[in-house]
Image 1 (cartoon, rainbow, N blue to C red):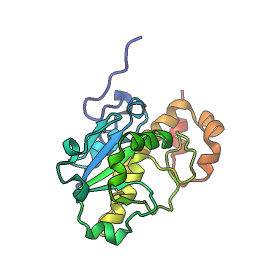
Image 2 (image 1 turned 180 degrees about the vertical axis):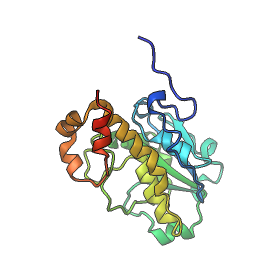
Image 3 (image 1 turned 90 degrees about the horizontal axis):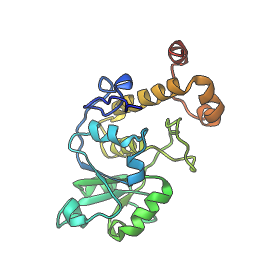
Length: 216
């Protein structure tokens, strides 16, 4: 069986190309995404979209990372880890410190915990916990936590908090379209049978008529 042709720009299958949906924005930080290798192989990972949506973002796939090679000699003073910890900085503190790098960890909660264990330098960084009240729109993947977000949703939440006058919500358009394409591919009935509970708890405006009209 031949592999599906991929768009060279968005790296999605040609049939579900997202190029027209991707919105590129600049932010006041360099976004560094450390991605678990297994997550990198997941066809519905949101991280590739995030990397293409924030200019100068860098995605690194692996398990062990060298902070000096990744962030420079002054990595401890210039980098902020997006992860909930006891002594996380509040919004005002995070803004006042004027960090250069914003680090996100991409993987399941267990994989992220392992990544922190394998990279103890991450625990030396100041951290920032997302203050999020919105339910995840990642309807096609299940999280063990009610407050779990996809990586692109987490990035948008933290960037919105740290950029008071700028909304990064527009970059979620491609993510939402990817979900719609996947629901269309699996069929609305299959989606509702397997993800009904999560579907009822969120507010994503899925175009059900559009999905039905594209069913064979």
